[in-house]
Image (tube, rainbow, N blue to C red; front, side, top):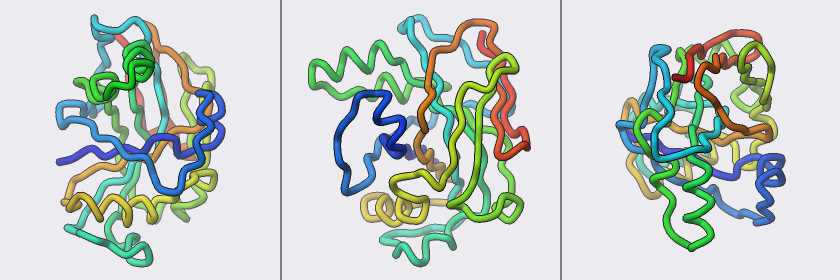
Length: 204
């Protein structure tokens, strides 16, 4: 099982991160299989970072083997989605970026890829018109809509499958909108697609 993630896929997030790149293709990075955190288990803040940020994203689960998938056929390769969190050790990432070094350790560390309950796409409607949001301690802190993606899901799948064979169970984190921020011990995170809560866990 692979965890494939898309960076800089919402213009609003790029602006808040002061990233002015004009992208012609999706920006892809990977998370390790040990990054996965599911079933509402708590996230424990690691001792190597003092600035862990949440990034709320729509997550797509691949359910069919595929390679070099044409964009017009990409919708055949997934049937379920959820909302998830791509945790980022922002202090590590910023330091490594300043040095021009790879920053995988800031993104792919253990339990940094949280997933909610997957639901059939038929229950959410058009993949390109899905609203989602995150609440922390009952307060809405981040919201987005897949309509605002720079690269929609099917284009991401087509692009990624040029480089990696997609296998059943692979997850694709599709990018985060504006509104990212830090978490603290004791926080209660709840993620929604529309008004349906699919993600519910605590920070320890």
